[in-house]
Amino acid sequence: MSRYLLFLAPLACPQQTMLIDSHLIIWPAVAVNITVTLSCPPGKIGDMLRKCDGHNTWGNPNLKHCKNVQFQELEDLVRDF
Image (cartoon, rainbow, N blue to C red):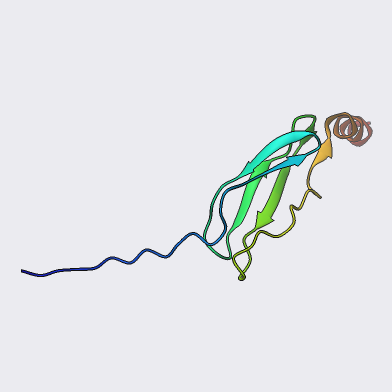
């Protein structure tokens, strides 16, 4: 009879909940060196990013692709003008 042991690598960064612009954001648990992409909080459009670094800790959220909805509408009007 053969026996196999299966070792699963633990998730490097645990699920984390945080407030961004007064909205509760839940970052899922992921393995090391994975970047998670979530939709921006309500009132903004685009995606926010966050990476689980090589030290098993979450980096800071990157919100540079989150634009205010009203600003985006104005930008679209100017571009279409």
